[in-house]
Length: 178
Image (cartoon, rainbow, N blue to C red; front, side):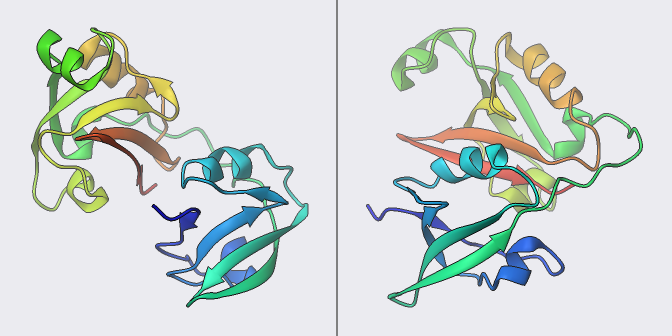
């Protein structure tokens, strides 16, 4: 497996765009810290101070490039409506004891994705039937479907929603649009 975090998209008018990031870049160092696995990056970026300029090393088409990115605070907004788990376009169910044991998750944690609505947010994010959602915004899903709904409901519409998903023997990080 390669090391680093793949840049899959760069939104216009963002610090990443201003720094010169491009789709397909692989971030290998962030502020001097090696990115061993893609999931190292969200934590490093979220704990770095806003308005600080950092050096980021990327591999672009086989060549190393150093970029300088000035972080910006996450935009503040007026209080927004809370998300509804049903608006994600997927149906979840409690993770059965046998399935939890099979994939090494404690019973009572995570939910099974039963169905994904074509064209919904979950489908756009790449969620598939059979996936297991284990975290919502870095909080472990406890208490089955009710726990999942509670965690999703804690996130305002307009704020990022990130799911940690188990598919087979791999974990993935799926981010839903605002």
